[in-house]
Amino acid sequence: MRSHCLMTVLCSASLSLSACSNQKVEHTGFLHDYSVLSERQSPSGQPLLAWVSPALARARYTQVYLAPSQFYPSAEPTKRIPLSTLAGVTDYYDAALRLELGKVLHLVNQPGPDTLVVRPAITQVATSTQGLRFYEWLPVTLVAAGVSTAAGIRDQDSEIATEVSFEDGSTGEVIAEVVRKGKGVALENDQQVLTADDVKVVLDGWASDLRQSYAGLRR
Image (cartoon, rainbow, N blue to C red; front, side, top):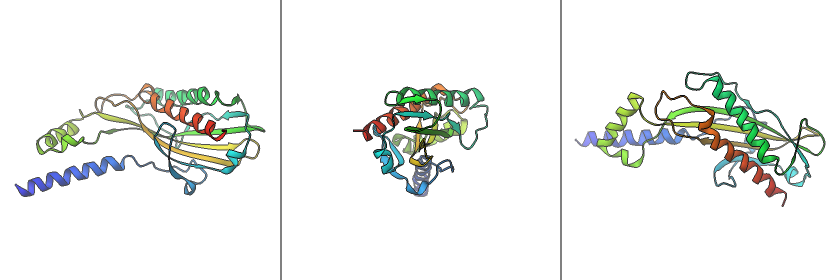
């Protein structure tokens, strides 16, 4: 009996650590230099990795060029994340960034003098089985949770990550970098198709935070 209880605790700890490890953001190579990134907090209170050059604070940008968002590395559609979802994610991300950054800078169609260039990438779109909640660590409910996971009926997290490079429109110099990860709407099971609507709240939050962060530098 003691060994069974010990096994239960070990399984619980293992599942908990696995859930935590899923929060780690993998660096893809999209950004110029990951070594300069440090942990920070967004205006909305969310954790992120970022670096801002003093050159950005000193610059007097009057306009912004938004490069079309892309998947990096390139994403292949799947049954659960079809091409319509992938296209919907980048289209909505572009629209959210235009809406928010357009509030503080004039939008232009190409880089140039006095222009901040924003190059966004979606580096992950995925689903994963939700981690155990505290009450599910009890021996009886742990068994039920394990059965639900094995049967594919356990709730699924929708996950998305981004990396954004900010550059000077005249020199091409990288003046800021940001890495973020977020969770969208929970899916009901491992058969439900992920749609762009499921992560729109995350994309809206990222765009709003970028606008507020830039506006904060101008004060």
